Image (cartoon, rainbow, N blue to C red; front, side, top):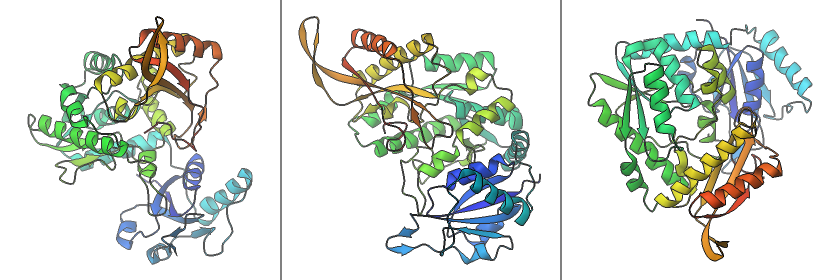
Length: 429
């Protein structure tokens, strides 16, 4: 299937994702790649129509300016150098930048507009079928947006060659395991295996404070669980994941420092026994939702707020304890319930509570307490690369505060996080 591509080469720009999304909005597919791509790597990418060398403030690494691979200049397609080797930066005005990109993409490169969700789905179905053949695939089905859309793609491509595995690692939101089983097994008829691994995960995480180590442990243990389940099934050689483009970008490149490791990017063990199937790895979050709707998934599922792969493990800040984890789960349930009552459920992109390993003095029933704070975070974003804060009315915050401090064991304060991304990230860890 023809799918013209423009390659954006990361030469230290802070606008790689902006440029990629803007060109995709023209109906032309774009991919971001490192500056040292080899000729062999280039040869594996079909339908390259043009290359943008996207330089910027991070071009100097370890005191040396990175240089574009000679293979890029020898690819036989037009090359646009931006803020690179003395070339001009992108225009300040968006209209001027779009005009420059349109001229390069359509006039210089002659690219055609084949990028849309229907074509993407057709392309991925064929790609999945070619990769898997008559093999069997395991899918980590959390019930979140990403894994649900992957499930939709895999069901269309493979049918009964797919087994969905839902792992309850003890880090899910209140009522979530029961909901996943009901929706996917009972209502959608999926081949779903439920695994109760609460003790297995929490024992591994006991005493671990560092967020990166948490992610690595959770990612590795997921693989071990799948290996155990795979032994019970014939010919399972493939593991499907809901990896999306921001996961890969935020895990770092040679010219962009890592924001954080994502458990499905940097947390996989070296001795992985599966071949990965990751059909969404080139999509931004809004594109994932668009894909879900095009697959016919219900809007209630597609627009469900995102949930990190490590779950509440990265919202129970510091070393995870079962009592503090329960405080996160219960406070989060209250927040979600009150946002729904207030009509904010479909308005705010993501909202949750975090409970850090920090105590303060408070008063409950006329007696001194020494308990944790629950911190509310509510953000809006399009692509998860930047985020703004939702100005929640004070009356709603006051009601949520009263409920959490009176109903959740171990919480004596409620705080509201006002930090956008950047300087913060969406999650706390």
